[in-house]
Every structure is written in C-alpha cells, then in structure tokens.
Image (cartoon, rainbow over all chains, first blue to last red; front, side, top):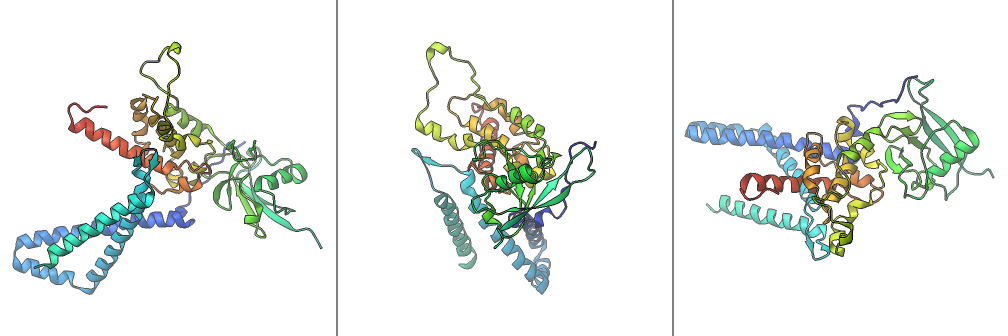
Length: 128
Length: 248
C-alpha cells in the first residue's frame, strides 16, 4: 500500500506547452530590462564624474557586443509591453451602464498613451 | 471492411500493488459521436472493469470528469474522439493533484481551499426575515454573474504552473469564488476574505500565466478575477495608508 501518488514536476515543464513557453519568455524579459537599467544608472554616474569618464563609457557602449545587447533589450521591452498591454482588459473592468467596455478599447487606450508618450520623448530628445 | 478503431492510452495506478503508475493501451471501436468519457465507459463495461474514474452528468454540468487529455486539462464529456482520430488519445488524471487510483485524484486540498475563502454571503447584521429578500438590479447581478458559473471541475488548477510548483497557492477557482462574493452587492464580508486572499499563498502568488482562463469550460475567467482582486487590494491599501479617513 503506497497511498496517493504525487507526480513530479519536471524542470522542463515550461517547454511542454506554447503558452507556458511564452509566459517564461515574458518573465525572462525582466532580466534584460534590469541589465539595461543598470547600464543607464552607470551612464548617469559617469556623466556626473566628468567629460572623460562619460566619453569613455560612451565608447564602451558603442562596442558591437553592447549594441547587440541593446537591440535584444529593446526587443524584450517591446515584447513585454505588448503582452502586458494585451492583458490590461483582464484587470480593468470598466462598465458603462450594464455594458462592459470591450477589451480592444481598454488595450487601445494603453497603446495610444504609449504612442503619445514615445512621440513626446522623441521630440524632447531630437529637437536639439 | 473492418470497423474503425481508436487507441486510448490510459494512466493506471493501483496503490495496493503499484509502486509507480504506468500506461495501458486499449483499442476500442471508434464512433464519431463519442466523447472520451464514452470511450472510457466502453473500456470499463467491456474490457477492464478495474479502471477507476469519476463522472456523473456527462453533459458539462457536474464538473466531475476532468482529465488530462493529450496533456490538456479538459472535461472528458466535452472532448470528442473525432478531435484526435486516427491518432491515439492519452488520458491522465488531472495534473498537479495527488492520484488516488487510476484517473481519480485527491480532492482534499481543493475542498479545503474553497472553504477558506468563506464563499457565502456575509452580512454585518442579518436582516430579520420579515424585511424580505435582499434585492438586486440586473446590473448588480451582472457584476459577479460570470464568476458564479464555476462548476468546481478543477481544470484551472491542473492548468496552473504556479499551483504545480507551489501547492500552497490558493489557486484560480477559490480566488474567483472569493471575488464572486466580494463583487456581490448583498455581501459585506470583503474584509473577512481579505486575510486569506492577500496572504502569502493568495493572489500575489499568481504570476498571470493565464492558462486557467483558457482551460475553464464555463468561461469564468479566473485569471481576470485574480488580477481584479490584486487591483482592488492595492487600491484598498493605498486608501488605508494615504487617507486618514479612508479605511474600508
């Protein structure tokens, strides 16, 4: 008599199903974003440390490996943003009278805010 | 011409004699209008009477016949053989639960969690019977109706990798049920449920994989219920901390 049997969870559980895999991919994006934030903080620190320190750091960031990292980090940030925006209708339930505001509108407002803010940042950065 | 057949590979485990589970293959007649539950009933009646499994209504109402069918949690009464034919169908007990015997899982953990969220109407002060019933407008019913459709089939727990890795997690159905009562205009028990909901094993364990909602045969959307509970819990917290008059 051995009693109820507990099936082990293999460490590869997230490879068994497309949805689990995409979920893990979304979680993994945080690693790239965290690494990017650290590089950004160092940039601010170097900027404060003086012109030479700042320029040598800029040269470091211009190295091919760093450029590749930034491209991957950008892709990770975009993937996270898009999957997250698509989930917002689950969290925000807005009712107008008896009717629930349709999901595409809730997600759409997020996308619209994203475009407006990105355009604003681009304008601030590029105008000078 | 021979009649068409289909193969079912069924998870077998008898604790009196088996150390570990194994799969047994059964070749049975293929009928286009059969669901997996019909096939399992055929096996039980004609081939192997020792096969153990749960079922009752065979029409998607009772929530007893949930199984892993080719790795996906489904009600076996709603999974047609024709979706898989001519390939074999692999049938396992619902994932993430201990197996009692063959396709029968242990329900104790789920039952305990359901009770933990106080899933009934709680009133600060009960009205006397003579005052009549608690009335609701259609809009007030619509606010929670979706979350009241749960049939306790546990497919959402079988779909949840958080529950697989962290069995203490309160889980999708129990949280959706708590949310069902929290959103009910007749209920005043939110604060009583909050201790369990916002505990270490409550809503904040959920990482929003979202597969509970995909698995749900009643379109309850437990993932949505959990995220809404997180939002409500956060707003409550800010109200309490930032506003002296805030509170509840």
